[in-house]
Image 1: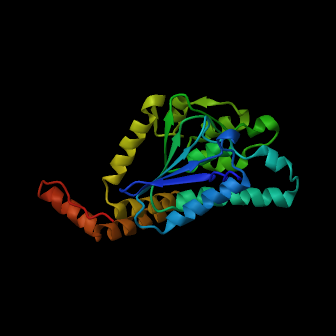
Image 2 (image 1 turned 60 degrees about the vertical axis):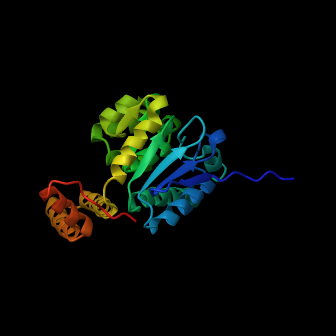
Image 3 (image 1 turned 30 degrees about the horizontal axis):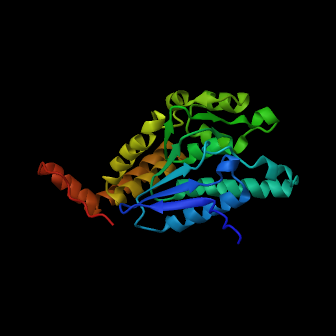
Length: 263
């Protein structure tokens, strides 16, 4: 009897609307093969219009978080058209994370390199184990990590991002925290507890406000300041008309905890 092939992305959901997507190529350090990216894309697409989802965690099985692209697979098809299609596929996955309505949190328990580091940067938030390490090491192979650089340049200071890209050197979890690549660092045995604290804080807020806020956050970053303020003002006006904001403000006035209806 043939043993079934394990799914490349494992999906779990708790009753509160927290969905965890776990990269499941542990023997390959969760390298982003075409098949793994396809599986992750399908998982993200399935969540995009699901109003019961309130937050998403991207985790990984095995020792590493993600070792970037599958270099053996890449080397087996040396053509410009193939590489262009591959990196386009990767970019779609990364942008799907940003476009997902709810916060996406990376749970980084081990090494995250190249496109794996890009994946961490593209998540809205990241919690890392103190023994995690990060690098965009393609330059060491003669391949400048240009696509990961898009994400890094939008999360770190320019000089810090370029240093990572041009040296290919690893940085520690604490350095990643200081540079803004991750939000929180915990000892390995406290990683899930720290992640839970962050998730609990997000889930305590009204989903409608978080969804509006995430969308506006990324839109305004790409605009000039005048357009950003105009968009933000319009978003806040819409937000104020939502039942959750009306209840929250009224609760503040009445000096009581708000009572929010959740999906």
